[in-house]
Length: 186
Image 1: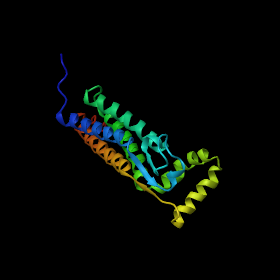
Image 2 (image 1 turned 180 degrees about the horizontal axis):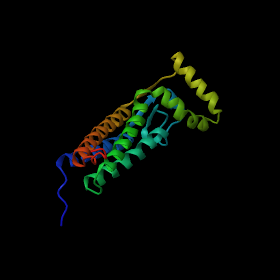
Image 3 (image 1 turned 90 degrees about the horizontal axis):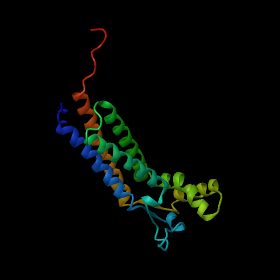
Image 4 (image 1 turned 30 degrees about the vertical axis):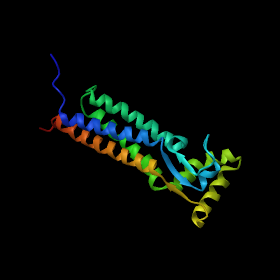
């Protein structure tokens, strides 16, 4: 006996989650930040142009890995690999984690560069990480240093939001598809 076809809304939610994850993966290869701080750690093949793509950043690599996990989960969900709420709930959790990481990168660039990339840049320069972070904070506070989010950070956030919307839709559809068991009080 064959299983019944999955409702269209479940497939659409999985496709939205995968599309958002794909956009986020693509965004990690675009510039995430531009500014003075990034001149001290030029990427190979660049003359210190003051930009850094997501793939060059620790936070960008984390976002990339989470987005790839979300792609796999979305694919499994779209193929009907598992029924019930658990896959939808895991997909939602991963998409919210993706939103948190890409949101932190896009909305708080000075904090993200200071906290996440400060140690990496200080190692590159061969200076104490704690003192270097203090110098960065002071430079940002006094306006001597500047870092701005670039198109990749915003695109990663938009992709993460799309993935979260698809995941929320998937959870709602799974609730309708798999009703809760009756209460023992009944």
